Image (cartoon, rainbow, N blue to C red):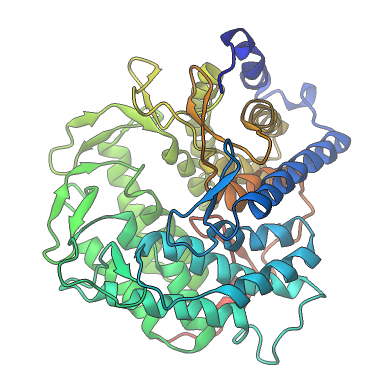
Length: 480
């Protein structure tokens, strides 16, 4: 599917207006009526995609929105359904949450001879099940176990998945392998190289499991992996992109904040907030200092050699757009706003962010022209609007809603953009579209949602796949 280039300026109007009015919010209001309108738009988008998945793709992992068929991607366990559970509660659909949860519980078979991604299974499946378990108290239709939140069928299923991942951590360093077999565990000839994010993105889910089940082992192995990764950084205080989990030697030495490393930094911050582990936030601050010194160029972040700091890739990756939101979480709002303003220049140029954008040449990188409906820039918009209440961020979010709705909607869902210059589409709708992209868009316009709170009773944090974990409940037991 391809759209003529004459309509492209319509996509960019909202983004251009942002730059014209940003900082002059008195003339750029976003009314309550308009917020309600966009809440309903986003909710309608969710149900179009969710129902399309159920009607055409279930029990496969994902919907193929152009052909209206399904495909398995990360393990063949109805991934989109699991990823959608907590979004249903955030949208207020408690009845469907109960029904969908029962479908997941009644049809999950873990005794299968398939190889699964340790990283993806953790953030999407274990994270999705834990989030649904914790938020289920917001549904009067759910009958909670007497021991809730320390017991419940979704929690039990999450732990069963975690137990299947444990063999991955049996390396010399304690850093996990990238793949295990769901039935047989670790292959003796498994590849020992994995990405940094695949090592440093367990503390939220595994820590939560330990606090809820009373079994400290999950949190301990996640911390051991983090400790080994911390010790592997270069003399400049940087980490590479891929590492050998047996030797602790980096096999890819490019250092940045994007693909392959991004959620490691995210989990240092959120792990410190969730479990009050001060060493994790100290590690993040040391990384931030090294990143600002060697990787940051103005308000952009390059890719550099971890040992020499020479620039290897002068590109912006759409995955990097989580960074302003992360800075906002730790109170660095002004810096976050400046960085996000730079990222929005890409939207002003193209309408949606490509996977790779060449900063000096101001153009998308060939073969990395797509936009798979990613949520990172929306997460940053949500956090910054929450911190500043600047309506300019609402206008940008509204523009993205309209763009996705107008140019990626299909008969049965929403399609990834194959080329942001030609507006061709790809036959794939990843599960994070429902678990993250839709969720952040909805929450931007729904300031009274139960997820938004002042932290006096329970604080909610999102995992890297957009799932919510409640701090007030998780911080129940401390083992160390």
